[in-house]
Length: 193
Image (cartoon, rainbow, N blue to C red; front, side, top):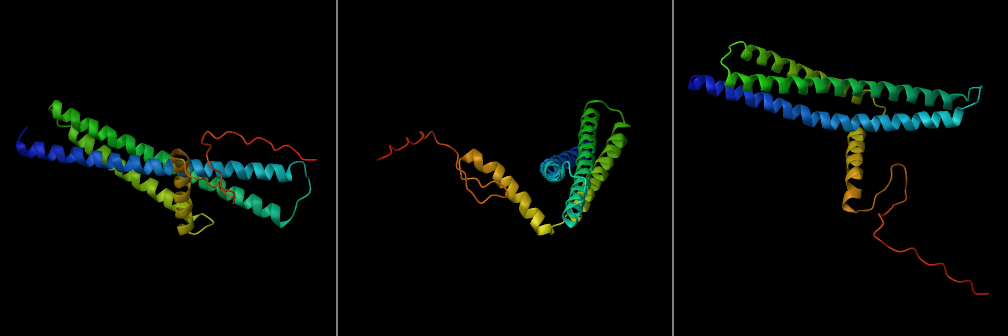
């Protein structure tokens, strides 16, 4: 291989590695969002089942709004699922592209470079489709984009706080719980009669 071919091969490898890194980071974020939406969907389903289980008559607007929000959460959960799946395919294609380029460095087969470029293009397309699906899901949310981003940031902060021993406020609660630090239980005081 000439110096020019080697330089082009290195550039192609770096491009594939960069797309792999972007896909991995985006996949991590989408995965946490997918899990959070799954938890919200499960909680909403339990709430629906607890409130309206065994009742045959409709409860009016409350029941209709709860069903509507449950369906909307289901659609959003499905969209994030497809988004995660698409980005996973993008990650697979970019890693396969990198491996083909590494194989090209070892074996002098000319068809490996076009195959690697085709996989690279498929990885970029899959990443863009995953981003597009994530944006559609964010658009279909009942809250504004800023509130959605804030809830994601708050969720990630709540996941990190217990590890470092800071007070944690559960979602939807005003109470602050503190992790136990080996304190003994207080002894009950004796009653004075």
